[in-house]
Amino acid sequence: MRAVTVREFGTPESLSIEEVASPEPGPDEILIDVRAVGVNFVDLLVIGGTYQFLPPRPFTPGKLPAGIVAKVGANVSRFSVGDRVLTTAEQGGYAERATALADHSYRIPDAMSFTDAAAMALAFDTAWFALRERGRLRKGESVLVLGATGSVGLAAVQLAKAFGAHVLAGVSSMAKADVAKAAGADEVIDLSVENLRDGLRTQVHAVTGGKGADVVIDSLGDRFFAAAFRALAWSGRLVVVGFAAGEIPTVKVNYLLVKNIEVSGLQVSDYRKRTPALMRECFEEIFALYEKGLVKPPDTSVRPLQEFAGALAEIRDRKAKSRIVLSN
Image (cartoon, rainbow, N blue to C red; front, side, top):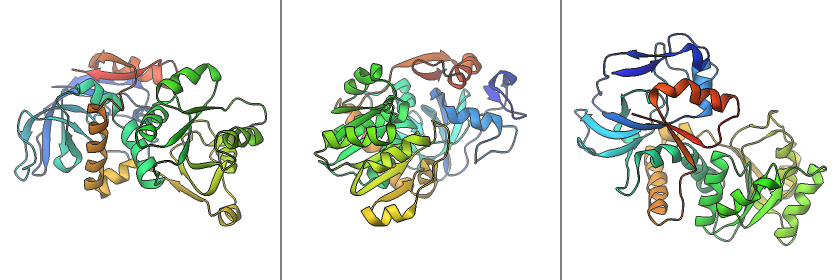
C-alpha cells in the first residue's frame, strides 16, 4: 500500500510516499481502508519531531483517519468488516490503510460522509471536552470563545449554541464577524481593540449585564488570556486549549481565590487513551447533533493523498483558507 513515511524528522517537503506492507490489526484493533483524514497543525509538530508524543521511526503521520473496516482483531466484537468508522488513531492516517484500537473507533452515521467526519475530527472533540468536561458549561450560561473563527473556535461556537449557551465569539478582526455569526454566535467581541486589557472586559460586560463570561475557551494564549481572564464572571471557568497567538501566559493565583475562578487545561488525546467510554459519548453526541443539522463541518478542501506536502505547507505558512482533508 501507499503511505507517507517519516524516516527522519523534518519538513513536509522532505517526506515521500512509499510502498509499504499493509499493517495487520492486533487482537484489540481494527484495520480500515482509509477514505479521508484531516490535515492538522499538530501533524507538522509530529513530522518535525517537536510534539510531546512521538512514535518510533519510521512511521506514517496522520491523526483520526476515517474509513471502512477491512479486518477486525480476534478480540473485537463491536465492529464488523464493512462498517463505516472514524478512529482516533494517533498516527497512520496518511496512508491507504491504517490500524486503530476498536475502543478508540466510532461508527459514522449513514448521513455523514467520510470527508465530513475527517473535517470535524480533532476540532469538534476538542471543543466538546473543553465545553462539557473542563468548562462544565450549563444551559443558559455565557461562553466566550477566543479565536472563534479557527477550527476549534468554530466548533466550540456551534456546540455551545447547540448546548443552549449565550455565545460570545472573540475575533481578531470585525471583518470575520459574519463567519462567527453564521456559526451561531450571539455576540461578537472585537479582539483588535487598542486597549485589549480593558476593552475586552468592557465588551463582555456590555452583553452579559455586567456579569462577565461564565466560561472562556482559550486557544490563543498570549495577551488574550490575561484580557479574557479579567472578563470572567464570579465562579467562572477558563479552559486553556492552546497558544496560537504565541506567548504562554501566567496567572496570579490570588485572583483565583478572590473571584472563585478556575483555570484548567485540555489535552484531548489523554481522554482518548484514559476514558474511551467518555470519548465515545462525545462523538455520539456530536454525530447526533450533525444528524439534526445543529452542527456542520467547516468549509473543506479535499486533496488526493499525493498532495500531502503542499497541504501541510499551506497550514504551516498560514495560507490555508479552509479545512484540508486528504482522500484515497
